[in-house]
Every structure is written in C-alpha cells, then in structure tokens.
Length: 96
Image (cartoon, rainbow, N blue to C red):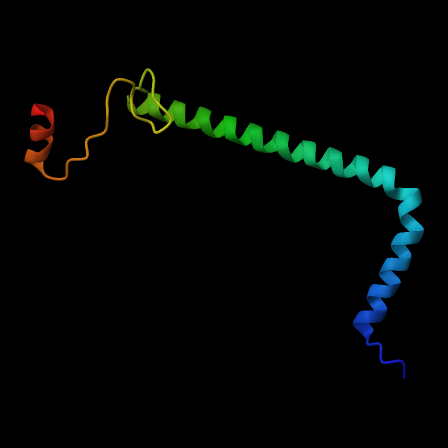
C-alpha cells in the first residue's frame, strides 16, 4: 500500500478538481460571492434600521422621550454620570 488514507485521497482529488474548475468558473464564483456579500450587508442594514424604528415607535407609545443630544456613552450633553454609590454621596459630590 502507498500509505494514503481516504482523507488524503479526498484532499488530493479536491485539489485536482479545483485546478480544473477554477480557471473557467473563477469569474462567475467571484461575482456570485460579491452579490451574496452585498445582499447580506444590505439585509443587516435594513434589519438595524427596522430595529431602531421599532424601538422609537415603542418608546413613543410608552410616552418615553429621547434625550435631545447624547455623547457616545449615552449621557446627555452637559451632564456627567455620578459615581456615587450611596444616597448621601451624590449630595457630597455636588458640594465639591
């Protein structure tokens, strides 16, 4: 025996098939992959927009108003999150 198992033979046959098919099918394969990626990105974007719209609509239905402006952390501009952990600590921070 040559010492090749079924997995090695399968890999060798796969590589040979790729060498035969790639020169003819590569442009078609690239176009289809590009179209698939574009469609996937478009679907993600539409899903995010739909999700944001749903959140906005549910917030309006519940009577919750959005902050007029917020920084990257979601803190309304001009306000800082308090690091206070106890009820009296917030008042002490305000005095400083």
